[in-house]
Image 1 (tube, rainbow, N blue to C red):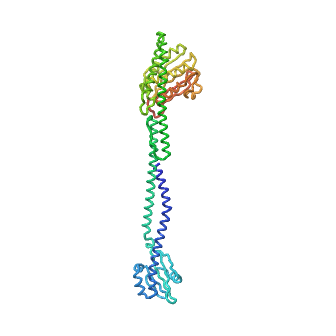
Image 2: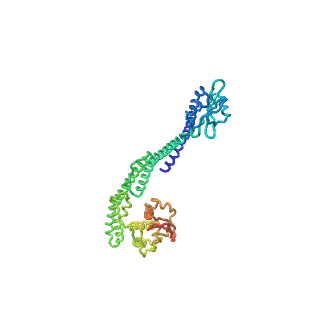
Length: 444
């Protein structure tokens, strides 16, 4: 922007300077020529009284020697019917024409101009005073004046560029501050604010940015309070459910284990929500710190399939776990991966009939980990609508696929919906373990 403003100021100031300086330069040259010719006219007029007294060549020679033009050999006197005194440069025809006139005239020659001044003498006689003005005298002082004008033009251009650059620097500085603040806010620094500066438009943008940042901070604070409040409200029904399970005896042990894990996650949510967030840290980041940043995906899948297998056996559902024999590191916390697996398997049990088979496949590729949940149900008629948060039916909140999608995208991966080899739906959760120059995700 500063470079563009500088070029613009140079162009505009140069055009304005040329519009004034070119006529001024011509006037300076014409003034110098007029001054030189006026000087020649004065020196010619100085000889008129001498011619009125005498036309003798010696007397005229002495009088001419007293003038500057005479000393330089630029003066001549043509006496009618007599000789020419001095050095003449004008053609005889031009001298004759000038003698017939009543006022001075100029004739242009190769080396300058000749002033011819007619003088009337006694009787019918006359004389013509010739003054030669060299080209150097005509242009005396012109080059120095043009140099001064050029210097003035350069100073004007440089001054305009300096002023334009200062104005541009102010705009650029305010724009850069706004861009830096927007980048910092986008990176999670909620304390970033801008002091309004620059033109009115940028000040308005800075005020709007500060208002937006304040609104985002308040919304995140409200989100944390709401998450903590909702999680705390779960404590009462969980306590009642725990008391009920305690009365069922040993056969309810799996349910008690699941309830204990649920209580632990609720406690974690409340702690993360109540913990003061650092500058630039959202609730999701604070919640994620409550768990390890990586886990053994194979172990998580074996644990969760062991939990869901009891319900699958009751409903007569064949199931299969593939690829979970060796450890596979996933770049997400174990708690978050567990929540995603439970959400996907819960969808299978919720949206397919009893007896429908399902399978879970763990895939480890180059820099990527994939978890594929497939079933033999009717499939998903509209995958795009299913990925929209809250778009699920059948009394579901519709958050299962959204939770899986956000977990995958937090690692740079993705969530895909496809037809499975069993004939139903297949949900693919791809987690990136490192940045790749080219996508390495492939459907399986």
